[in-house]
Length: 91
Image 1 (cartoon, rainbow, N blue to C red):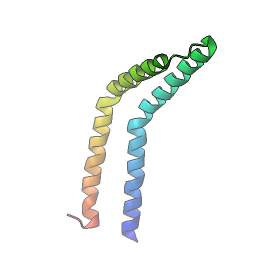
Image 2: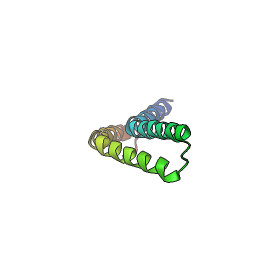
Image 3: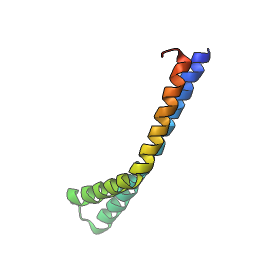
Image 4: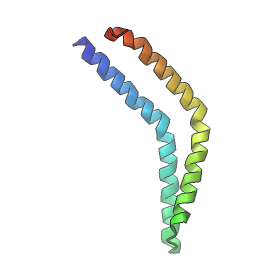
């Protein structure tokens, strides 16, 4: 019973880590995509490159901005997971 709670806690922490690391990047991609789509709809310009390039540049820029904090967060998360492995009796 106690093992199940530990597994659920680890799964919850994993989902939170994914949201914290990937969330800002995906949110920027979503916002830029919506803005570009709105501009394309208003101007009747339906060029595929016009929608891809700004999204790609925004996602790359945001990835570079959050890279250091994300790696720090993932390093802390990994250390927490390895510390908790001993609770499972796997070490």
